[in-house]
Length: 365
Image 1 (cartoon, helix red, strand yellow):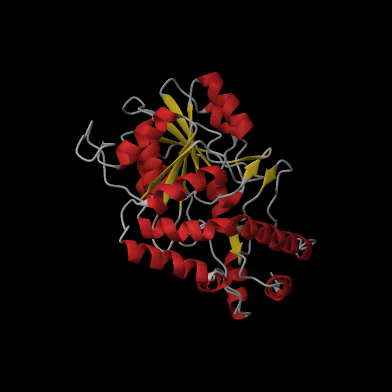
Image 2: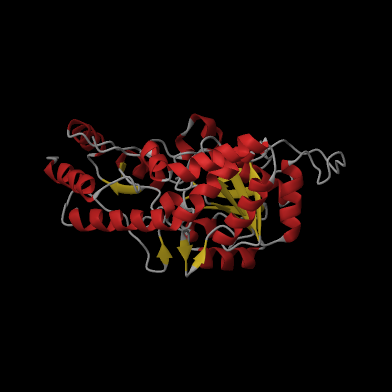
């Protein structure tokens, strides 16, 4: 069986580092806060080329806190890509604002800037730029657009740790960025976890206070916040993994290149398009085919795991029925039944990748 993801294999590859990190936290009882959290925030900020990092409880909290820290007018419109996980949009509505869905770009599946710009109104105050599957958004175009319209950019980096555009790592190119450390991410904890990155000292301070009950000092609450903390155990585990992340991303890119070469010429599928100025993090390797469900069934018979991200476009979810109208984006809805994620990760050997390629090529649509 070629596994879609193999976290146990990753653990065994760095077992001594992980075991030492866990033992250190248990020995010092630094379960909340502590030196490992502080060190991880500093190290992850440096890795992502950001000035500030705030560890939080999960990626969804990271987006919500980022939105709150921007102090937007109540009921602001925030533009969100129609092709993403619901965390990108529910963070908007749960923060008291209104989601406006935008089309996906047909090449990278990230935001379509032309469609996005035409949806801007006087109520629009921010954009959530989702670096989907590990491919960065066009941040140069987005920042130019944001400057012209006076908008804030929130980067949703849950799938793009280590991704780059024009030589810059994503996360602090916009005004503020949000990361998830869910176990299956390229940099994953052994439970939930998240982080906020920014180059703005005021946004960093506000985010840290929101995440810690509206305070910096223990009982000096300046306003009502929430309890959203990256615990010391997860921080220590993430510290142990971080030095390996660049190598893991390089390995993912090597696997992606093997897929691209091996599946070339298969007329009934489309492969990922990688723009020249990006370093793709390849959290997922997503192909497109009209025969998605049949292919997935065939791969299972051949001993190959696969996944679907995401089976329902955000505007088509029951949660957003109230937003649907004649101008609702349609490309993400058209793409949803065609997208299939092949196995991806440093656990894969060349033999595994070739088995996946062979299984795909042997499928008869």
